[in-house]
Image (cartoon, rainbow, N blue to C red; front, side, top):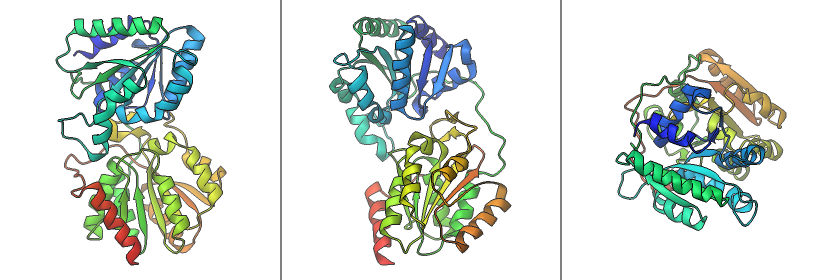
Length: 377
C-alpha cells in the first residue's frame, strides 16, 4: 500500500495527533511521519513507552474530542494493558483511539525468539482487551482499508478503541531521508573496546536489539566466547533491573549493563531505583545514539537529553558522558581503578554492519551458559 494513501485515509478520520514507539514493521510509516512533520499530522510525539502513548491519546481526546493514533510493535501491547483497561475502556472513561500494531512473530513467519509467543497471541490479546481489529497486508486494497476505518469510526462513536494489525511489508518502501546524528564513535567500536576491557570475573547484561547482537559478536572475537553475557533479547527497558539484582546478589563480581538510550527512557524510573539501591559493583553503560535504531532508526522522544546528568541526580556516584575513543578509554581505566556505582553515557553514531549476525544458540541455551559462568567462578 502507498503510505500516502494510508495517511490520507487516517486524516479523513479526523486524527490530528500521532504518538507511539517506533517499530521496524512500521518503519515506512514512522519515517514518513517523521519527515513530513506537520504536513502529515499537526502533532507527532514519540513516547517513552507504549503505555505513555495511550496517556497522550487520552489527553488528546479530553482536549479536542478527537481520537489519536497510537503506533507500536505488538510487544508493546503489554505496556498498554493497564491504561487501556483501567482508563480507556468503556467501563471506565470510554476513550476512543486507533491502535496501529506492527505484527512481529506472526505465526508461520520466521522471526526472533522474543517475538514468537507475542506473535501467536496478538489477535487473541486484542480480543481479550475488547478491541476489534483489522489486519493490513501488502495485498490490502484501498477499499478494504476504507472499510476497516469505517468500522473504526463506528467504534469511536461508541467510545471504543479500534486496532489495525500491520503485517511486515504492508507498506511500499519510500526514499525518505533517515535520521543521523553528529557523533563519530561507532557503537560496535565502543562495544569492542568494552569487550577488550572486561576481566574474566566480570558479568555483562546487554539490552535488546543491535547492542546484544554486537556484544555477542565482539565477545566471540575478543574473548573467544560470550558466556559472560546475558542477552536481554526482549523486554525492552528491563536489562538494567536484571543487572541491578545480579549486582546485589553477586557483590564480589563486577556487573556491566549495556543499555540503549531508547530502552533507558522507556523505564527511566529504574535508574532512580538503582541509585537508591547503591550497588557499588554495577557499571551502567548507555550507548546513546539518540535513536531507536534497532527498529528503524527513528529519533527517541528526547534525543537531546543528557542522561548522565539525570542519573547523577539519582544517586549514581560517578555519572559521565564521553565522546570518542580517547575519552572512552580514559573512563574505562578510571572505572577499573575505583569501585563505585557508575553511569557511563557514550555518545555513538547510528549505523550497523549489514552482515551483523544474530545469536546461534537458543535463548535457553544462552541463559544456561550464562548461569554456568556465574556458578563456576
